[in-house]
Length: 276
Image (cartoon, rainbow, N blue to C red; front, side, top):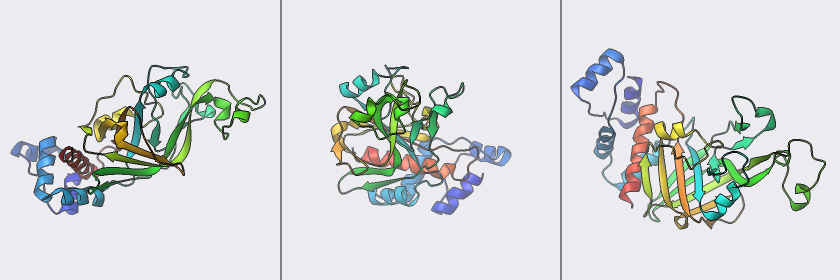
């Protein structure tokens, strides 16, 4: 019920629900909505693409922001995966928001990969309708290869990589550096999917959980030539191969703004579909 009140306060409008849904709300304080109802609600408050873009930017989720995992599938990235000790046939993300990294002290029975999720989740998603771009910015992790665990705390260089005196494990682990991330996605030929199923060929160990994307997320898939990635101060470059960008947000049970978020997510799906 609180989620409906939050939506009405934000948009000064209500979602049309059936009598059965209204009874569920009265008796249980909750009901199941259909995607078509969210889509119709958006159509009722957004007259055109500019209004839709304004909704997406004005109601951008915060606290937490939106997480991102970007996978690039090509022969070169598969070659990198061959160095993995576990699941070399599954692809790790090339960049993520927030930063996920390996830490030896984090290795345990419950966390066999030793993955630490950085507490900072800072992202911003904007639209450039003139250039037909979706732009994602935030602080996250940049994949720097598979290296000996003892080297993950260091700035990797050819000389340091062969030095024998560094303490720690020599076992190979994924190495992600914390960086400012910017991704620009051309929408004209993008495929978009709400609540995507996990893919067996992807390794989500150093990523937001695939369950988050499945329950509260979206997948944008396109050829890498339509994606420009900039990491830190490095020159921006186009990607090569199939590129999959997952966006999603964790929600605690009965979060007040959860319905507003799913309206936002549906609006994002709608504008990408319209701009193909």
